[in-house]
Amino acid sequence: MDTSSEGDHELAPNDISFNTIPFSLNFHPTEDLLVVSDAEGRVKLYKYSLDENELKLSLKPHQSGCRQANFSSDGKYIFTASSDCSMKVIDINTGSILYTREEAHDYSINCLVSKEFMVFTGDDEGTIKVWDMRQQNIVCEFQEHGDFISDITTIDDRHIAATSGDGGVSIYNFVRKSMDDISEKSDNELLSCLSLDNGQKLVCGSQDGSILIYDRNNLENVKKFAGHPQSVDALVKVNNNTFFSGSSDGIIRYIGLRPKKLLGVVGEHSTFPIERMAVSRDNRYLGSISHDYSLRFWNVSSFYEEDESEDGDSTTAANEIENDDDEIEDLENADQVNDNDSDSEMGDEDDDDDDDDEEEEEEEEEESSSDEDIKRKKPQQNPIKAQQTEKQKQKQKQKRSFFKDL
Image (cartoon, rainbow, N blue to C red; front, side):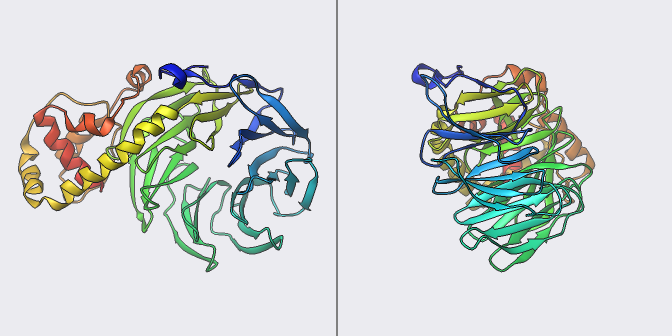
């Protein structure tokens, strides 16, 4: 399977097909292995390569759907969570079930994330539990949401964030066993969550296709923008400024955070919804599973190589804007510049009390983009630099918008 890169960057392992809809996908932290769980409770371990994909292990630890299978940080074990409310620990070398917690939750477990010796689980009724697997006991639990926990992400060594079907996102300090903050409920379900900008931003995908960006230090500060015609079910970090999104329309998109912009398309599963995505240990392959009963590999090494330099470019640009008061004043005076040429940026619905209604309407109109145009557009090689080389009139407004987003 090829991407738009050249040479060796075009190569990726062949697709893997299943007889049952796959529920989860995760890559091994140190080896070329991946684990997939499915709707019938099976867990399969594969060794992937350009030559062939070898099935190393197949077992059925759960009698109902295994909604999540994830490697431990050292790669020796697989943690699984099921709709039968149980959680298990599997040895990847023997396939032996080393530990079982039959009633880990009172309701079906929907997600599981591990970090070092800690495991975090969320169920269909909004309960989050923190486990210390050294003692195989619960450290603490939280019941702040009124609907299913859709995703959990680690922010740092002390904090996790969780999204829920009730439309809210919450942050917890699992060391102090306390909740730090919880947002107001949005109008639709939040389905996926990602920590970006050195843990200062939480990016959440929603049921209606919009993406919500929360300030980690104040969840009341949220920005919403469109760009997906259907729900955003999976998010994968590229760097602090860019990420991949998987949508129910079957398309994997490449998105920038500052400025908020669709940068291109990685690939698609025809029109079948994307269930989950994950990136390999070396950032070489992006894996995606879908309702088309397949796992597809995408060679995304070029995205990560490019974005290593873009991180530096983004930091430099931010510092220039923050430290140059004269330039900021010029941008304020440049507000009257009128330019009908616009980029294919995602629609920004930020609320700003300092801007009048006409200015907001004009900026939203300039930043909106056609999803069909994005589907045909190839990923930009360096979106930050391309943004800086826009026409002079547009450049003033874009710098001003970029400053607001910092």
